[in-house]
Amino acid sequence: MVVDYLENLDKYTSLNPLFASAIEFLNSSDISALEIGKTELKGKDLVINVAQTTPKTKEEAKLETHNLFIDIQIPLSGVEIFGYTPAKDCKPADATYNSEKDITFFEGLAENYISVKPGMFAIFFPQDGHAPGISNTGVKKIIVKVLA
Image (tube, rainbow, N blue to C red):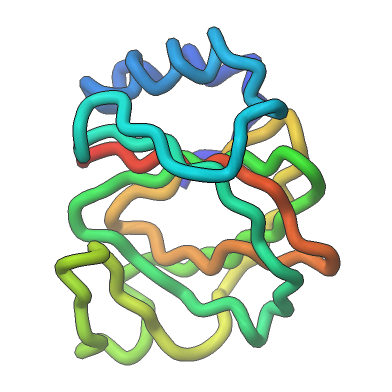
């Protein structure tokens, strides 16, 4: 997991061959004005998803992992709290993987929580269990799906 400010996003291009294209799109766009919906930048390998979440408590937020994709999550309209637990420590270990949506959901609360506000981002790799969307009001956000 990486949490940083958007002004430093360029420093992460070497982490994945597709990051450069994602970062170029984000830097050349007025991200706060992006409409809700999905945009494929490199087919299904690199997708920008602008979403509006509903209010969610820590208890309602489910830990999840992705086997094939990395998430770059960028809150736009408010503070979003993310739960974090290393995937190897998520319970139950035999949770069902949904290959169509590339997601596994786990039970229980996250071990740690971090607040990410507008102007920041969080990157979650396949080894990072994360519980997104925790906020009192809901958050407009960008989720960049990058083939790992």
